[in-house]
Image (cartoon, rainbow, N blue to C red; front, side, top):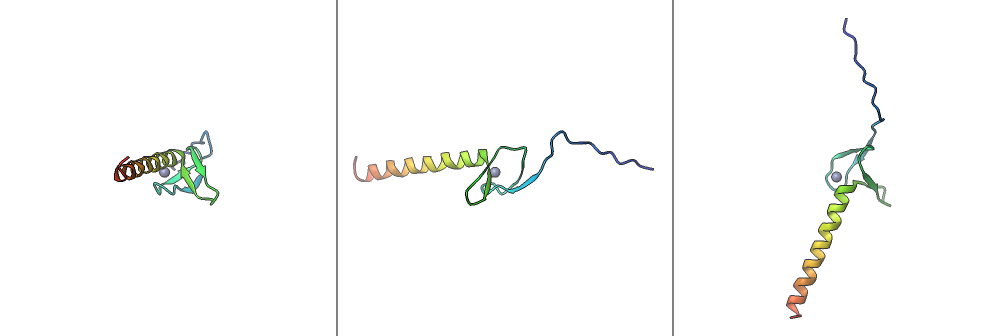
Length: 70
Ligand SMILES: [Zn+2]
């Protein structure tokens, strides 16, 4: 007869849903953020997205400045 091996987890890991950026399932042991819209995302994914948006904004500003000859 086989005995079922049950390892008790040190921390209860709960599935908290999908990250809106990378679409992967997240667990409560990861760093994550919850938006006002109740959407959830990895903290790292949000940070990356913020940096990307900033880079794009900076690039557009530069392009506009180039166009207007500043
Ligand atoms: Zn993510």
